[in-house]
Length: 330
Image (cartoon, rainbow, N blue to C red):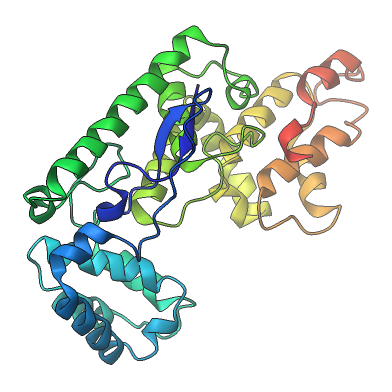
């Protein structure tokens, strides 16, 4: 198993978040670099351009310097400059493309608009959601070799993390799925969890929802891979989930909830009735983990005394098998 330590290969230049290291290593974690401290890109741009960038950005979007995601946006603009692209022209185009003032964080919205690929215009880096090294930095006499070596290090450690999957017991998040998760998917998720520093106690396969575009895109991909053949169950139950509580269908736990609803239905319980009761009673569902909360309510409620198409009450074994609530969401 691998753990995450501080900043990864090209974090200073490419917003890459973390280097994976063996959990038993005594090497202290490196300090994670924040986007505003990307020395290579800033060094390449030069002090005059950096100062001009800050002033011009404030002129294009007044008050932008006060937005929470301003450091991330600033780093993105510096990477555009490292590519030889005019960052201010790109910023002006992004700001003028659609309405902006209603956003809670205009800097975050602009950062999202600037890059449709999610890789900060640098191409894919050592991990699917991380940007590559801009050519200007790759050719830099001081930073080029360093950044390339760090990028290679992340690839190596990610490969080591995947290789441990075959030799270790399945992680806790995988054992609660109710179906076998392919080892290749487990490996990819373990790399993600290490890089994103997901707590071992967090039973969600990919942990907290990521806001950055490339990270979120890969997270959704991994969640779908983990769900696997649960897609059929979600097609069966998705319409009812959407009808009873529209937000449920987009919850990361929704595929598992649908899978378990299908399972208890096959066991002879009235899954639709249980679902309706769980959603409409017990107060509002939480904003986060709503689908898991529904399953918890189902698991702690009393099942119908008579399952459909049967004159017999459901056995206690049926309840025990299908109604155990997920530990991580208690």
